[in-house]
Amino acid sequence: QVQLVQSGAEVKKPGASVKVSCKASGYSFTGYYIHWVRQAPGQGLDWMGWINPKSGDTKYAQNFQGRVTMTLDTSISTAYMEVSGLRSDDTAVYYCARGYCSRSSCHPAYYFDYWGQGALVTVSS
Amino acid sequence: QSVLTQPPSASGTPGQRVTISCSGNYFNIASNTVTWYQQLPGTAPKLLIYKINQRPSGVPDRFSGSQSGTSASLAISGLQSEDEADYYCASWDDNLSGWVFGGGTKLTVL
Image 1 (cartoon, chains in turn yellow, orange):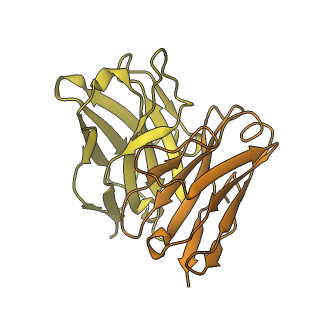
Image 2 (spheres, one colour):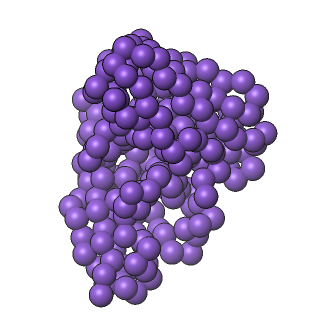
């Protein structure tokens, strides 16, 4: 079965960086986009961007450009999302999600069919 | 401020039918199909409805979606206590070349 298992909770100081991992299993990792979505405490969902595990191409949401980097290690079917220059308002749960693919195509505009369990990042001095 | 607009809350009694609206614009809902996610307390979002009105395996047919113009809605019939959750609409936005979400609707089963 498809599973996305994320790394554990982190506590960071303002200005630091954090790298969250998302390990995929149960499907061909390079065949599906990985998206990252953030949820601040008590708030809604905020899309951060996607990475194509086949090509390594990335697209970041405007709000996160310049501070977010998405990478891969295809040898272990794992995607990473790093946020630099952390601020207190980066305190949130960070989710990875798999983008759906049809039999014939994949596109970042296709919905998310599986989600990781989330990783809480707390930014506090 | 979310790009898609949802009511912050909705409620109903067991057995009732409840609808949750989602409003967008030409670049998102009017040009792409809406997806709905259910987030039970303390858990990750889960795919509920895709391609307007398709349900993944395991989602009861009490859940249905519709879409017209720049708006979409989620209907839940035969409301049950386990439906108490946050519901989010989402759509691809052609102008932003990315995904946009509604602010979420907290459904309370009275």
